[in-house]
Length: 127
Image 1 (cartoon, rainbow, N blue to C red):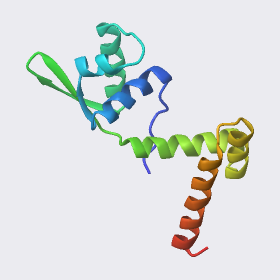
Image 2 (cartoon, rainbow, N blue to C red):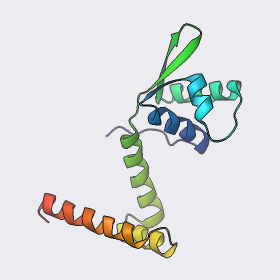
Image 3 (cartoon, rainbow, N blue to C red):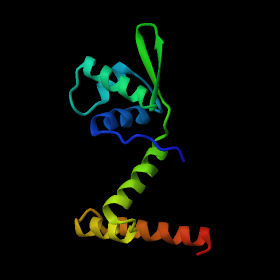
């Protein structure tokens, strides 16, 4: 799997908007969907950085720039998940789940969903 540069929160927020719009969006659409206020020129700077990092491509459509995601959300999630698991939890999924549970981030339903997912993986992989 290709390695992508880690995104700072501000750039990740923009990518989340692009991904939520189906992987393509014009700058005004992105600006309108961001949760925190941002000037058009600041957005343009972030979008340019995302292009340089290989996350987005840009095509000019009339007076508007249309951005297309070059990295799929799932690919980035997988990479970030592995990075966090490795760096913060020494590669231990058990430690990660324990931290979520102890921090009260998992409720009973989520624990049941996780258990069902692990059972499904076990059947699928023949473990």
